[in-house]
Image (cartoon, rainbow, N blue to C red; front, top):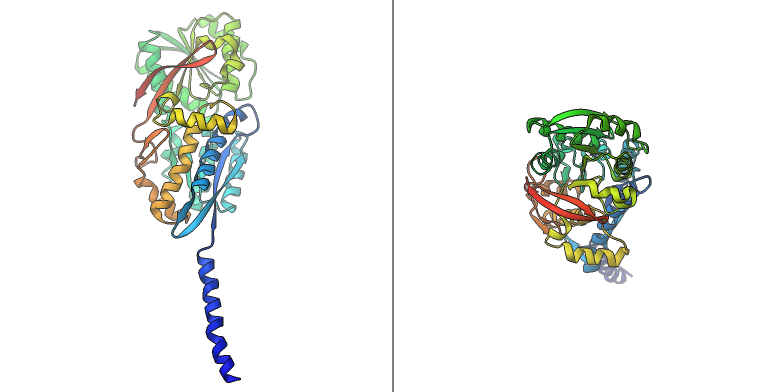
Length: 380
């Protein structure tokens, strides 16, 4: 009997050891959060952002990912903030509770900024693919990054276009009273004044407005050379359309929120009078743009709106940080981020000490027969 016990003990120990070894090498599921408005007037932009992140996750899983000896399967934890700051903070807390390793988002500055404190408090990396208000990265959070230029660069680029190309002497400004729209309009106004342009008026509307005729009628009487509109395409389209109906001749300038493929559906032939900016490289100028466009359209059967290439690269940047940290621990991923030097679809991405791009680019567009056409690329 004693002999049998003596023989069984090493076998049990061996089984136990195999069990622990198997557990150590078990597959690991890692969640990456994504947040954008999937409902409301700019849901098409939110879905475009989500699609870019989803395509990256699917490709990485197909190729296979191993971190610290474990096979890792990525899961995209996609959430809807409806472009609402309050819902954005609720969704941010949900992602923290879901134990995501990092977050791609949010889309809007007005949602990105309030959510950023929640991610910072939890030590979770946040990469916004499209929030351009400078305040986002001026809070001092070590978790906050973005892969686009800021309004401190986008606003001046539009003002320079007004002064140097349009040869404008006067401007009327309208914004949608959001962190993005007002922030962009304010940066434009500062630069316009420094260039000697006369600011005739600066009016505020809101991001749910549909009727701009009262503001536009007032502006028509002011007779500006250009009109600057700070907002998204859901309101910018009707704004441009109603300006055309009221026979305003002034060129309408706007930022990346308006600069979408859907603008022509919202504004009709009034798009011919719009010049807009994008806080990043034009798709046709991106090193991996053409190939990305083929894969995106094949997967989702729809055109790219604006920032899906940026969400795509943001996911790969997160994985690059995980690889360099040799860990999926959120805090170690955050610690690896400052040394990022990633070459992807949008080009080479490196960050300054605030989490902004070291080499930001602004692209300017007009519309021809309802299609975006690249006018110029400005390196800031």
